[in-house]
Structures are given as C-alpha cells and as structure tokens.
Length: 254
Ligand code: PXP
Image (cartoon, rainbow, N blue to C red; front, side, top):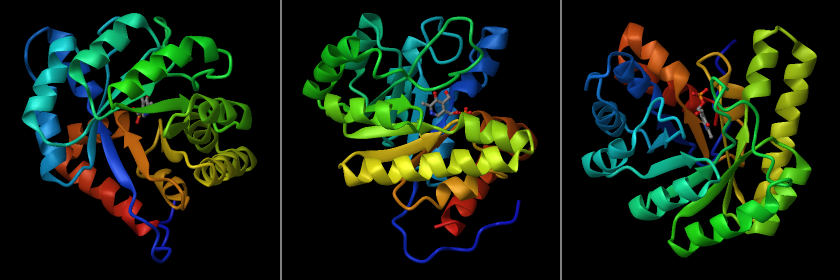
C-alpha cells in the first residue's frame, strides 16, 4: 500500500505501544529476558505516547509484578487492558493506571478476537465502570464499530471507546477490497459518531505498516494501540526503528 500524503492539520494521533509480546517471549523460557520494562523505556525514548499492557486471567504475557515495574520505569501513561472481572478491578484499583480498557477475554483465544459485547454485559459493566471512574482511571471499552455498542458506551458514560480493527485487517489480508472499504467506512462513521457524542475514539488490533494509514487518516481518532506487529518487526529491525516507522506512517496520514 502507498503512503498516504499528509492530510493538512488534523490533531496528532497518539501511539500506544502494547508490550505484551515482549513478555510472551520472556515467559517462553521462564526467566527475566527480554524484560517488558526495557521495551517500555525504549517506547518512551522514541516518543511513544503510552504503554499498553493486557493482564490476562492466565497471565500468559504480562504478570502482576510487571505492572508496578512498568509504572516505576517510565512517566508514560499506562493503559491497562482488562477483562470485566472483580479480580482485574481490584488490580486496577491497586495500581491506578492512567487508563483501563475493558476487553473481552476467553481463555482459549489466541488474542482478543472481536470487541466487547458492552450491550449484552451492560449490568456487569455498570459497577466496574463506576468504581474505575471513582478512582480517576480513564475508562475505555474495546468494542466493534457498531452503533448499538457505542450507544451502550454512551449510556455507561465512558470517556473513551477503542474500536476493534481486526475485521478491517483481516479483509485486507484476504485481498477483499469491498469488505475492506466496508470495514473502513464502519470505523470512520462510528469514530465520527463517538466524537459527536463527546466520546474520544481510539482504535487498534492487527495494525501494521501496510494497513495503518487509512485508519490513521480518520480525523476523529485520537490514539492507536499497536502491539504484535511492532514487537514482531523488532525481531528484525529493533524496537526503536519499528516504532519510529509506525510513528512516521501515522503522522504522514494526518
Ligand atoms: N487494543 C486492544 C484493546 C487489544 O486487546 C490489543 C491486543 O491485545 C491491541 C490493541 C493490539 O493489537 P495487536 O497486538 O494486534 O497490535
């Protein structure tokens, strides 16, 4: 895909780097190396805007003790991705990350497949969102770009939603132009609707050097959270150049 030329003067788009998969590699051997804290420091040193980490129920990548270590090691805001459970709520309230993004979680899935059914989980979410808000944690819901889900987010009073870009990324991989255009339109429309209703829209999942620019060009988006591709690229080029290239592509699309 061609680089998209800079659009004019859209507000800057923040890049949150998801460092989970540094921990995945560490955990493969059970030791301390590579340390996700070192990755967080590199993100800070190359101008990344935030650190994202998903503390999963099975602790397959980030572990509890990593959270405080990451918070101590950089001044970047921490965006904690968490399932809507009492256990994760307790951890979030103890660590007080800048933001908490509520994600769906199934033990058997390889990654977060699909957005949170916020509409279906409304009654479970109300007390969790309330407790996080009372603790001054910026709550986000990781949802599909779907009007019903967005309405629930509005009803719950969350300040942020993150739109799942997985279907968009899959459509590109499948070489399906119509589906790609449809997915992009869905995210574009819902980002505009979110912003119009006072919710800050973010996006993430499956974003790469090749597919990031049409998403980065959506004017209302304020933040992208990108993980697996950056960490995988880092194997070949190092983390610093991988983040710099992603940053440049995002900036060029604005
Ligand atoms: N945003 C959220 C809410 C996620 O759950 C994930 C995956 O953990 C990402 C962004 C990053 O997705 P990827 O690793 O595919 O870049």
